[in-house]
Length: 223
Image (cartoon, rainbow, N blue to C red):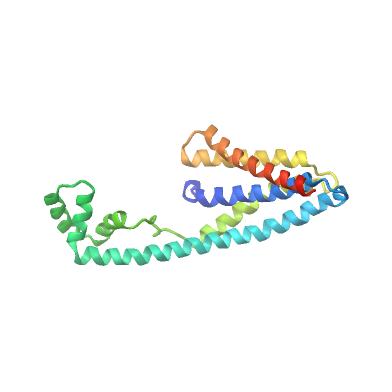
């Protein structure tokens, strides 16, 4: 699987998984309410795992439905464009002229392209449809990748509590694990997009850190 083809699902699911799960850890840590020390670690695991499964399913299904709806809309609009390309070369000529081609050359090109409806439709679609190409879209695959990414990255903040046990798990270990997961997600984004690794990591870690601080602050206020 090429990461760049599914970067949206991996980063979207992974970042949300890390942030929402760690928000539970940070929220309980920030509360410091009476009795929180006794129930906090167990509550982190209970609510964290519940969130991991429920929110992961919600995100996976949301990605599936969103991609499916967008694909259906794209194919519906493309059928209209194919019909125009087949019966109205003037519309294709206008699209070519709008892109800077001389009017006479646009007319000649339009008549030639009329013999290749799919290519003509691509040109018209690019001109008239404000939609990404969804011919290769696989809604079920995209939903599963989002769900898997959410689970894989979202589990990281809970690992100290799962591996060492609720009593031995600590906020510090969870913070370190979460930072490492955000760092890895930033590196993955930088590798897939070709942008600078420093910028990709800084953006991913920065956004995740802000969300974690917000959760900690809310927990402190409520506590």
